Length: 200
Image (spheres, rainbow, N blue to C red):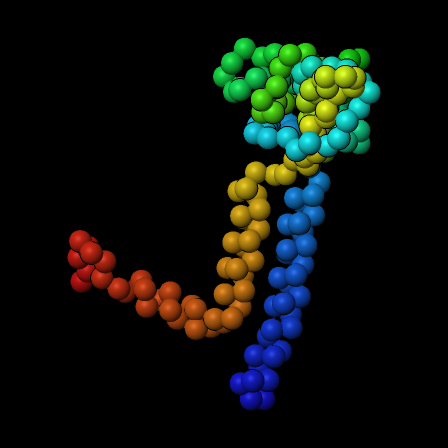
């Protein structure tokens, strides 16, 4: 078979493998963040777009979060904290979520008025998967009701996880494309003189 035919045969399984690996990475990205004992997850937002108005009158922020019920292990405990500007400050709100105390958020009257804030989740024991976050700021109107500034956010794994997927895919493809020649190349590198290194 000619060279073009060999390249065509190689490209088909390689493209399929690459598509599979990318699908796995995308799936991992869309499933939220898994927190195990000792893990923490911090999210900071710096702006909230105007969503609309409501008849509800309130001045301040509100946050809510969702956990995957199937991921919760018996006896789990997760601390949730909300901060004004940085997680180095004293929290505006702090509570521990357990099977007996299943709160899903907090009202922060008089806070987050500049449409920025920080939340942190710390897993004290067990496992939980954080799947969504909501942030709201209510600004009362002169007549009645409030403007609502809102942001939905889906947590994603740390960039290192996604980067590993991409790097693994590239290295595999390069290795397959190089074939036996790659091994020979490594052998040549082993005999190459390095700066500052003597070789016999």
